[in-house]
Image (tube, rainbow, N blue to C red; front, side, top):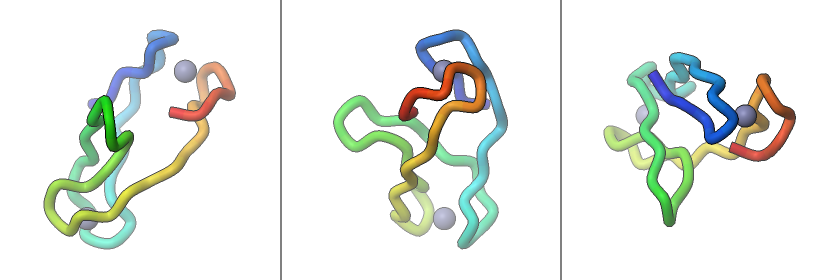
Length: 49
Ligand SMILES: [Zn+2]
Ligand SMILES: [Zn+2]
């Protein structure tokens, strides 16, 4: 589960390999398995994740 700064939590998975994404302070959302970086808008607050 990922938790956004607004408190919204969601299970977000990589579209390539289906594994859970992680959040890194410098790199943002990314998949530690295939290295894919993900830019997405938080469904809870509408701001970039
Ligand atoms: Zn992946
Ligand atoms: Zn949010």
